[in-house]
View 1 (cartoon, one colour):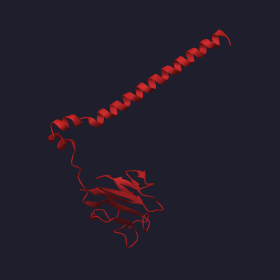
View 2: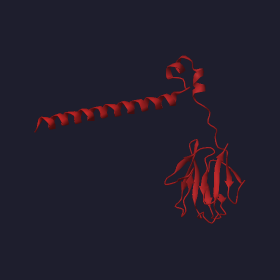
View 3: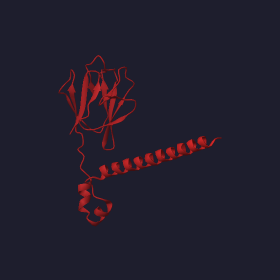
View 4: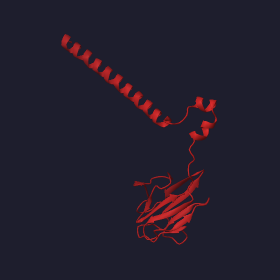
Length: 159
């Protein structure tokens, strides 16, 4: 090997080392920024131990959904109060919310409670179920005001 080749390899490895160092620093900086954003305004554990009244401020009260509202489609304005039982959505007569929609399947989707949250799952429908423009491939949690689209029908959970 010539001296020029060895020098080029040394500079290549040096450059690779610096790229590695910069990528590590960038990843650490990104992680620190995410931690800061999550903790912005929230008291630290030490502050909560010294002043327990801060714990109440630290945990914001999440509004619980109380009703299912149809916001678009043939049944616009329809509301269903939420209970502890699942809600079946589809064109079938045994569905909790019978959708008058050609794009809905007989047993299209199921909205069900789990703990303090509500989840939506597609039941193998032909045209799919969409949660905020994302097609469901598995059960996902539904937050307040996030639209769920089944064909031309759009529903939301409301307090």
